[in-house]
Image (tube, rainbow, N blue to C red; front, side, top):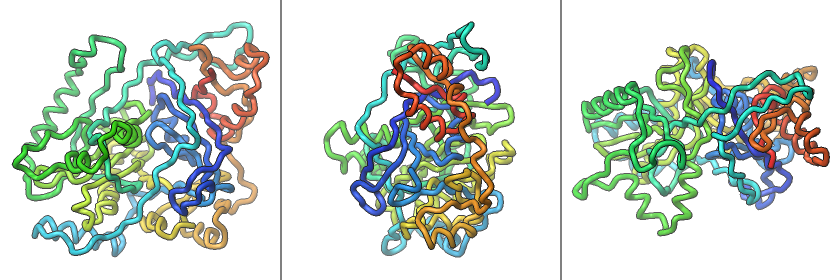
Length: 464
């Protein structure tokens, strides 16, 4: 955002090997490019998802559309023009009836679920110390790169509201309007004494107190939805089990599951950012908590970006599966997007993740109308009703029917792509001169073409 002096730092992993598909179960049919994001600005992530990328924790991936077994098209809904369908109204009525009468519907609705991204390969990200990264002006060698500010410490929205283990139900969307608080996280292992509470801004403390008062005022006879970076108060032994307790009972007694849960649902590379013309809550990653009678029944993970609310995941207590919480939370999130648009005019879209036409169970996202699919070749948005006929004939299709159209961000000069080498920021052309024996130009060329020229000139590609 304006005035922000942060960089995005990524490591590119390529995408030559196939791995298991979570949709058709093909063991080696899923192909995607991937990169690990150590830190990322919300604008860079907005631009990346508008080129077909998507994050799973800190891992950011882009399906190889003309090669993967189940092509995944980025889908967005026009939140301001959205009209609930007959099935959506049925879900809302079912929830209202449950709140009024307290009886769960008989039977369970088997809602379709998104497959969690399986990171290709077993490559591990490198250790990058952000605070020591600096921009080094290389005089006499290059002129095209303007002076860049020093990389600032990452301030991330704390998304630790989730429990440390999970029986997850996947979906891509999730939320509704409500007050919440954001608390910058102190950087682990750096700064003040870690055993002491982190310093908090007075503004954040006031917001937190307002949120606490608001929660105290809420009645316990209905479901409320809040966004909060702080974990809920543990339930007493004489109260019904909370979602966290139920999850912990189901999870094996190993730290591996807790680690994977945190990495997938809690970790995020996005920095918390604020802008005068942005929403009051700011931008970044958030957890939306759904409460019923003092117990948490569902948690949605969302990203608030400059142009959209992007749904990441939803998990909920299995006792409430018959309430169609996946679809219900998506409707709430669309309403939340409308509220944010009143504070930030360009924030008017709701991204549901990927639409997979070749998998019939995953076509439900097309029911949130009006919506668009992203053309995998020109990266322009095409109304979904124009895309369906093409996808009926072929799993992969160039959705933009203008044959003369091309990629507006087509890579023109890989030499201008920024790299991070030995804690110094420099264009790839300079890096190549410094590393005369460097043989990674093909990899950098591929990376830069996938993120586009503008992103390549802003994002720092880590080189060991």
